[in-house]
Length: 301
Image 1 (tube, rainbow, N blue to C red):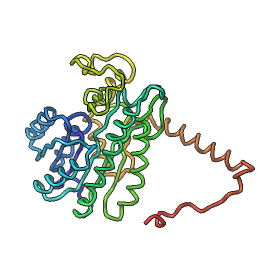
Image 2: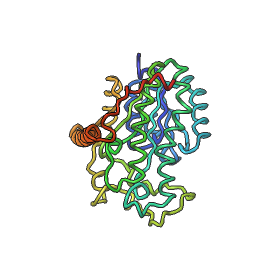
Image 3: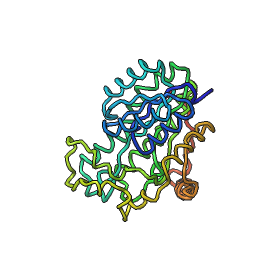
């Protein structure tokens, strides 16, 4: 199946960073590109850049937290391009509201991160998948993280949502394969984006989480940051490199898209820990003699 040329993809959070880079990459492969974002100014700039490259683009302001916005995006996409063959659930937040000591996380911090990083993906899948089915198949990339492979200290809500997206993508891959839809979870390590500055777009209905939000352009510039996560992001890979890897992995049919091979040690350590815990269970006088067949996916149809 041709994955790109003449097909149409919807990319949330497509006005900058990873989303915009992938929009460029698949657009150069011949796709019609629909980008959505909550920032109308950034969206207009992204639309102009894509158009200047000869990419057929539709830019729509939308909030991934709102199912009605997703429905509006789908209607506009069908009206413009006639069908949908791809989806990239890219919109996400990090920063202060997603990480830090557990006792410092407010209910609003958790709700905001879950609403965007998890429910935004769920609403995107629920709304767009029927149209990819109707088009005869295609592909979906859900942006997780290496945090979706292994939780990290002080990861908080970010850990929770990215682990959820990775697990959901595995299940959806099995569920949607019969419809000719391949599903992949994108799990990069650090990439040069502004995700660590997400508090700049945090809606007022979540409160300020008792934090001092970033206000100045200097605060918003990763190049001026020198410590912690900000410094790691500053030294991350370029989004354009990641975008080329996404195209490569989709063609290969990868269920996980990795961009940092050296991080395999993180997964190896995690699964070694899991195997050790299974071995401990097998030696347990309480559960060691329990046997059951692996779950049959057909049971869930």
